[in-house]
Length: 620
Image (cartoon, one colour):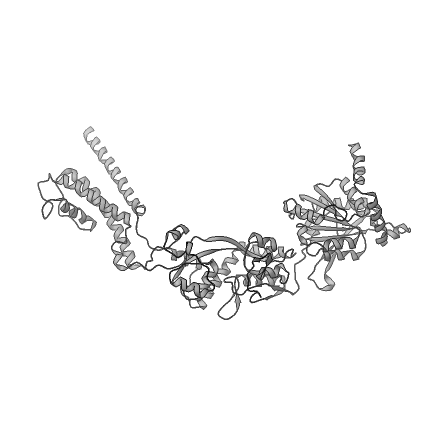
């Protein structure tokens, strides 16, 4: 341990080239007035006190950053910064550390940090980056040459100058969302303290810097990184928008801008105190596509920093995510296929509708089989039970009387037939009751033919899709194709707007199974430092259900304003949508098997009781 204590400083010193050290030392003396004053006999200042800096920074690391996963320390190659860094490493930093020279590194530190961030090792709020510097101009040039992409977590700028003009470095690091500058100061007792300087870019000119003395004994991360964007003070944001995006952003019948995005933006603007300007349509009339390596449309405006952000329903996909900074997803959308509502069943089919094909086939097959068996049993009966001669057809007609709710005047005298008839009559009672109930429902409640719910059913249906899928230039041609029986593939939310405004909402429906589900978010300029504030509000609105509530009210108001009465205004959207899905369907074997199970259970129970009675009678 003693050998390590002496060898480690020597190894760290050997890492500093002699010629670089000499240049850095000369620059430090010439560029720091306080350093010159110290050499002339004045009181010593911070560049000459690396132990004090190291001690103060270690105290901050052990209090405010005690939960930090990794630490990246950058320095400006000056001898003062290297001395502080050397003593800082010897002091025992309680976390994983990476050291980088922003000037003399063989690899560009910005590229290195970007590579390190992509690997997922230094890209969260629990990862801290510290920049030690003495040369203010050198550090400002370094920060201006890079965007905030090179550091994702908080950034701590530690100045070795005492001059307050160093706070201009904060302007160069303005695109970092959480950044603070520590300026050294000495107490009357000779103890080193830091003034914590925070930059508020949207405050009035005289209030953009806020300074507070760091109390390292009680310092927390929250106290160190103040909220930089609590108030935008009336800042005007220019939005890349397209006001034809139902239900996110569109004009209502009164030519007023409404939509989910408008409601969310208005709420956030009232809380953060900013204004905004919406454009009606992008100049190139594109949404957000990458054409020949160039982004066009609304997203292109944001990428080129012509506009601040987008509130339209922009799907979060990989290439867009890499070009801009997307907010947290607040809504999910998809593509759906809209078909014409099938015509209702003709009234003449009411007689056969209550049962499905297999039920009718099963009843007929059972009736024929039972007629043959029963005919063989009753031939031994001397008393006639029919009004005409005894044959199989007459037996079938006689057994069918129960299905039609008609009584029989007498039963055969053959004892084995009575148990047979009891089972048949109970079964016929179940069938006739089920048939009558379903028939009454069919005749009294308006019914719809079964709609297509899955893509598998759609593929098997006779719809103009699949190989005949074609792209039409405008919605007039789309609706003409729809009227002729074609399906329409369009965004799920926007298709509602299309068919409502074209008076086809009552004659159309969307297939339940959707295509290409995706998440929707707002798109900001790459490196927008205030994005996390919007994320906080968007996440709260989504988690609390406000987004879905706004969607329901916006769609309901729009339907009411257009005179669309498909959904009642007195009922909730979700409740009515569930009611519309409850269409009548023919009974199948699965629907009526419960009655036959009860019948079988009752028969077994009756047989068990009979056996018990016989045993008791003969044993008693």
